[in-house]
Length: 282
Image (cartoon, rainbow, N blue to C red; front, side, top):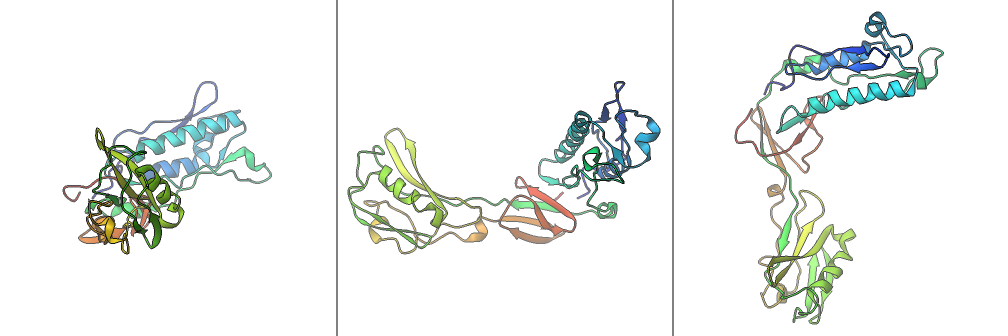
């Protein structure tokens, strides 16, 4: 995959007639590393702006309003670059954050420093990348349906074990009671319960993992809740974890991760988000 936002730079830093700094917007074919270098080298003297000063070196910002204008323009460039590809987003500019620093005898508040993290040589290489699976949360829905959430009782007593934590269900518990009992333990189980309406007059218990790629384990739950006369869980065994993890193939090698965001240990020097499954490598 060739980096989708590389190319000839059309980036510039200049000032408006009233002396406010202005950063040009991104167009197709821009090289983000050129942006980084120009941001690093550009000088903006808000009181006496000249093109020579703009092009010469460190950025001097002497008014808070002008500093905000630079930051806003920088963020606009960053946002446009980050939105160039709907499947695979690099954070090339993510670490080019405005940092207040003291230069010489001038106070720190007078300067804006933007420094690139990545080497331009990084993007001389191309990668074949395919997202074959994105990480997701596990969800389990009980087979038993209730006519309502607060009146009909479950009818059987037995223990419900979620990720090793035992929750006692009594025969007189309503669906709402069961949801409350489960959610009282969610800081331990990392599982949240809800009453879902499958159709009019048909409600059921839904269990949702709070974290990506963590299976819900009901092992140890009483047998009454396997039978549909109880809560009716089809199985108590957790699904395989790899069915919940993100899977990304880079140059023929598959990488499995528990997250879709800020994956930084696959391509050296680049972090990315896996946003959707891709039908083929790109």
